[in-house]
Length: 350
Ligand SMILES: NC(=O)c1ccc[n+]([C@@H]2O[C@H](COP(=O)([O-])OP(=O)(O)OC[C@H]3O[C@@H](n4cnc5c(N)ncnc54)[C@H](O)[C@@H]3O)[C@@H](O)[C@H]2O)c1
Ligand SMILES: O=C(O)C[C@H](O)C(=O)O
Image 1 (cartoon, rainbow, N blue to C red):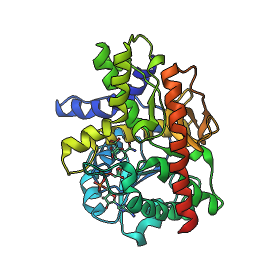
Image 2 (cartoon, protein in one colour):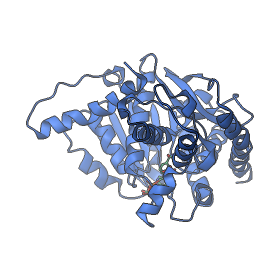
Image 3 (tube, helix red, strand yellow):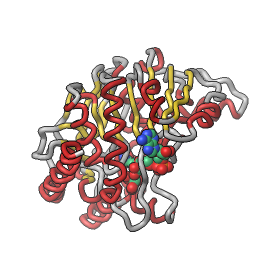
Image 4 (spheres, rainbow, N blue to C red):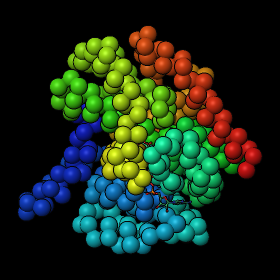
């Protein structure tokens, strides 16, 4: 099975039973390891633009025994609505800071899309002032309620919020580098989509690794390593730029109504499922994610990682880079160091 088919199939499995049901056909689901295991997964920010559709995809998967929805608003309605979907797994609602502990208690996995999104003209770093304290507060509660869970951080700016989360866990003495991951999956989804369009390839057969971080030029697709593709110099420059600034395309098109939510829900639910597969003993689960790393001088860096029973079991290197890709890494590592320091300084000073 190609890497891309392996990536797509779980999502197809999420959607297929629903589509078949709509046609009145009863579907036999084929489950991976995570289907059989007991698990509790929390979504923090569950009532938001990403949180709602991502929770729906997770509920439709039938693979989560207990889906725990937390937000500061509206979770009872979201949970009541989702709980009517006739797929396996219970849904619980938790609203407001006083219910956050119960939402997180006993979780194996916590997925965090809490925080404000961009408007046109903003960078992700412009969200720092608001989202840094939101993420810090969530990390503090996670350290108390579910210190052994895997934490998937979606809230922007990821290049700073992941170091914030990590430093809160370190201060509490519960940091495990294998269990903290910044979600960069949407960059891979975009890269696969744009490369398939450019090359006239079947999108199911395209697999692009994207390394570095999740903001502008720190997003670095390794187009020189894409199997079966032939790019001109112009293609490489244009595609790299489009992948790096794909988020801006959505922010501009939404015209003040927020940033990517539906594609992020797809990317987040898919990545969460891959982490659950690893936790539940599946082998050969490999995805790019933003983790504590010694591959470069940046303390956190996204690269292909194997996902196993304790989270990230191996941080892989990124292979031989083209001169263009090497220049991107050289130029962007200082920016990643700076954004990580901004996060860790915030924890030190607040
Ligand atoms: N990593 C990525 O690739 C990626 C992609 C898209 C968006 N994002 C980021 O995800 C975040 C959420 O985006 P969105 O469009 O869903 O925003 P949104 O405003 O629609 O939803 C955010 C939700 O977070 C909730 N929230 C705020 N403070 C909270 C707290 N302390 N605890 C729990 N919930 C809290 C809000 O009530 C809201 O429901 C933004 O920071 C955005 O930039 C990241
Ligand atoms: O662009 C944004 O602000 C949201 C997200 O990081 C994205 O890449 O779509």
